[in-house]
Length: 144
Image (cartoon, rainbow, N blue to C red):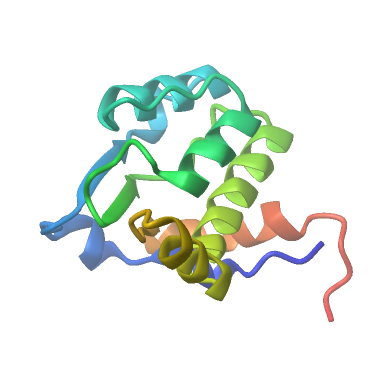
């Protein structure tokens, strides 16, 4: 499956800037030694959020039912290279899938139907991370 890396934001300026009117979670790459560290970092920073595996992370970022803020921004100071290669790939895939889901027409329709709030999810990385993120996501796939 091809993931649209354009859904991730690679910007040094946005990492340094203050993000207003949003819940901001910060992932310190050097502190991430395992996938549990990713879950723990997000669990500490997002209210009533508890992810303990990749499926739960996907479900929670895909629903954000526990977050009153319209926008959620996850700022990374680098790629969490303490993860194994497959874990890093899964983490990036989860972020992209959830960002894409919130931008879809289905999310807007669900919000209208059930009266649930629409959210916006953004994942920001330094610009130097783009090439490695792209290699990680597309590893083993032919480039078309």
